[in-house]
Length: 103
Image 1 (cartoon, rainbow, N blue to C red):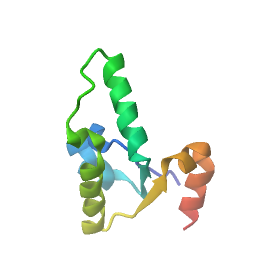
Image 2 (cartoon, rainbow, N blue to C red):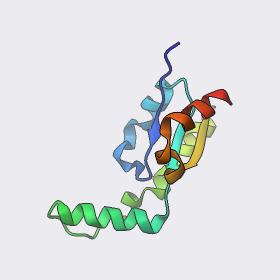
Image 3 (cartoon, helix red, strand yellow):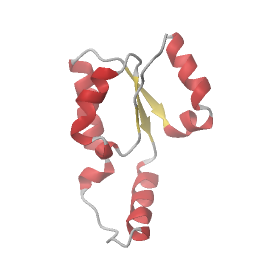
Image 4 (cartoon, rainbow, N blue to C red):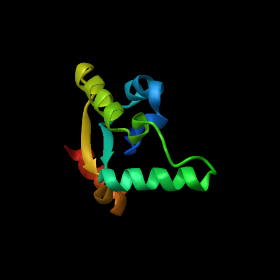
């Protein structure tokens, strides 16, 4: 049986208003990747500079508030989810996903 999943990176603003639609299409727990906030912010600053933009960006782009909203959405709509350290997931995503599927 084919399974559809959704992995939300540590900067979930990229999914934004499309999250409810995407979350409703999954038949696998939504995976929220969590990363050290210092690394998130440093990475975002670097990407802005590389793109020729100002390194200053709105708080929303850190993703923490939006991720909390997305987690609440999952709770309110009985959509299974898992909070995962990004480094753990990235080290072996296939194995991690298979373990999550067994739960």
